[in-house]
Image (tube, rainbow, N blue to C red; front, side, top):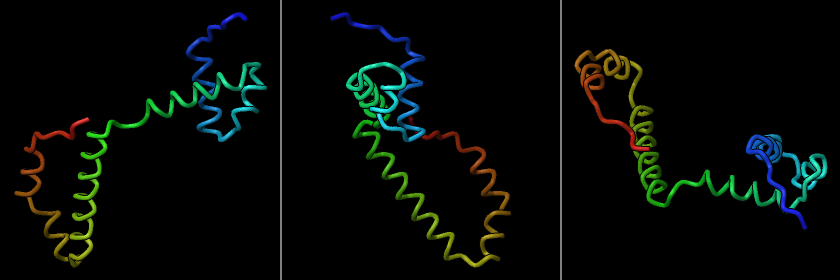
Length: 104
């Protein structure tokens, strides 16, 4: 049995039809003339590649929690208080001077 080598662009297009357009693996594989188990493998590898590492996931969850708490705090402010906060030049300078970055 001969082993075929497919171009990366071909693989990407096939996977996108399944992931982005919601088509079935069997249907896409049949239309492209490839074995469906090959396409299942490509889709599986694509999904695994998009998964964050557990340590990254924990950091992302902590950041999301912080944003949610911040959003709840802002939701409790009256409109006048919020306008004062947003128009505070000292606060804007602090935010502008803050050189911290979100770690990827």
